[in-house]
Length: 505
Image (cartoon, rainbow, N blue to C red; front, side):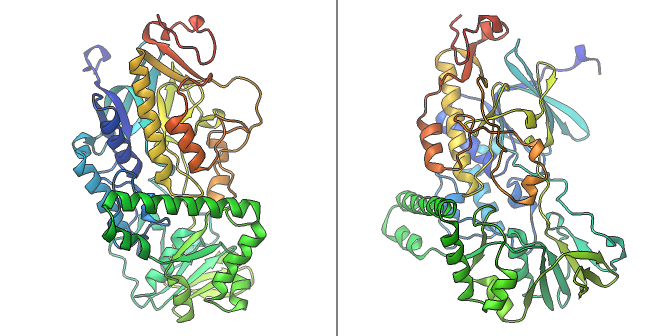
């Protein structure tokens, strides 16, 4: 169709990308704090829930407690603090329905490009829908599409993979009809997915072996928080939730700070807790990592389920590297053969920014790896666009809530002063640092694709809920870095008096 005949894009004030935990939360915040703003949510899949709708493997659950993974505005009222996937999916869906967010979602819309025009002070968003391209326009874009590729997970190029006569499955694409009853299963990996799968699959499988290249720190917590459940009986739901959320958040931050300040002591404590469940030889060989605590995420073991499965003989752990797949299983570098009917490659995620969508500013394609993260919420030189990337040392939603609040504050501030464009500008000399101070393989593989941070605020990621709360919830909008312009001046950068200047005409 000729562009002159193309219908004008549907316009909304704010376009949210993604109807998962972050996107639904962002929409609720927008409705509460910016009630006059129109918005739409573009969701590439046919359902609400994001991660919690995509992943359907046995035992899928949170690796954070739901008092901090849940929204600040909607109390988690279930008995279990460590919740399963269906419960979390229901929680997100209930939130969308209760706040009327579900009426704003456009399903099966995969965003492929967002293009900013300074002259128009507007984004044009292109999305694939039913084999065609649909266009939307928005004054502000909120990217809540997570941080990994929904199309495919990460699987190393295992030698001899084609020789194996059984099934090979990545947890991101779990077959609904998979029958593993009585089967021998190998789960490759030692992260949260593997630690969830192994005890869950022992309920039906003949035996489950977790094959890891190196150990990961694990910590056991009760699936239910007895104090939180009691408080709900004594106090109003929101007050009880707020107190528990504060307690849990404070505990997370204290443990992380201790791990960084006194890694040896924290390491000793974590390993000591596992020794209460398993013998010294097993702990030394399979549960003693080579790195310090919190250089990678801790793996959560609810109610000791992983350790109980090992003690019962239903599961085992092998620490070795893979030489090759064989017809009947895996041959290890040590020469040992592991036989299996099913191999699960719980080998991680493929990370990407903005759901893989292309970001274009005034005709120039943006490479996120060459830009800097501002306040943990925006990108340098990219106007009117915010994104959510949760904490690596705490629950994702703690950060998502704060970023949503900040975006609402920024939008209201721009309205109050008749501003059309907000763009972070990096000036001065800083020390470049990687986006995440984490040694996990899935971060290291794509470090060049992720935005950079520096050694100084507001271009530094503090991984601190307390710091971010003060900065994002209460910090000044005009900070000498965020450049704010009126529509009449947005296309005349020569009028800008400098970084952070507000133009009035």
